[in-house]
Length: 339
Image 1 (cartoon, rainbow, N blue to C red):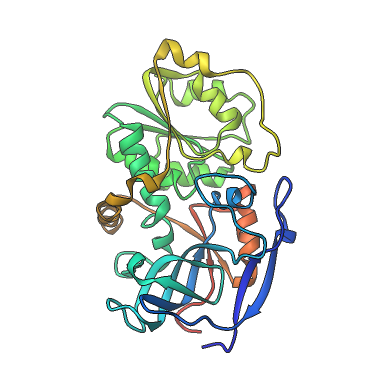
Image 2: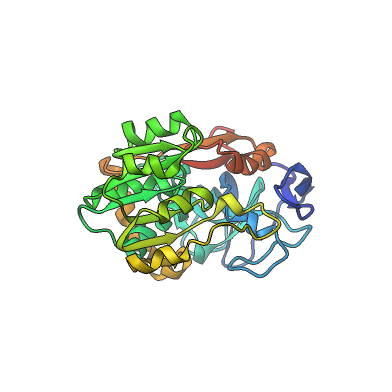
């Protein structure tokens, strides 16, 4: 063990897009677990778009971080000291921790990590919160039927890439929006999407959708918002379902963006638009993770993690989410099993 614990602290609230001034790396004592807690050596930590909302001093579904608070999120860690009955030193677990070398986790809230199913970082992606978001968001909110056309924005991200593959397993035609030719190729060549659109390489999203989704859109899984969503709304079919999972195009806006009003387009097609919070399905997480694990183990669902090495680089990994640096799930490797 290290003699001290490095941890990233939320240093100041950003205006617009965050930068390195929002973070400060500090040294502290290695924390002591109390009864019912685990001290883990963090192997991998997750950075996610929703964390941008926690940087605002405003009420939301996730409590804002206080300035000076240690950055928090999902981690995979190796148990160093256990004061819980179900785990012992050496066990690999995942749960809610901090951006640090060592973190204390609630023993009742963690789950074991099985490297025989997938490499440990997958527990922060396809087998973690993003995978469960895709599972419930598509199957419960999107409610796809065989033969439907499903369009996914942010399709090469941690959530969108799983959404598209579950839609294919459900017998749907799947179209994804992504931001590079490499991502488009990954979606179509590796994940089985029927079509993908590089939104940075086309001027007219509506025309691109005419080619990629000639029969219109039955289910839209929205991770992005902005002009892509405006274009998809014009292509919705009768009784279409829209699952609003994220709006990363607007997360750094200081004001509310305005533009052509799109709600009238929902009237003639009687479309349903529903916001999605995965925590609403918490009582069913175990079943979803089991099914996702079976799909991953069989090869029915493929996954990819973009791994940034070193705790020192955690802020850069987070900031990279807003420039589309990642393919699949963005994670930070804090420590591996050999160091």
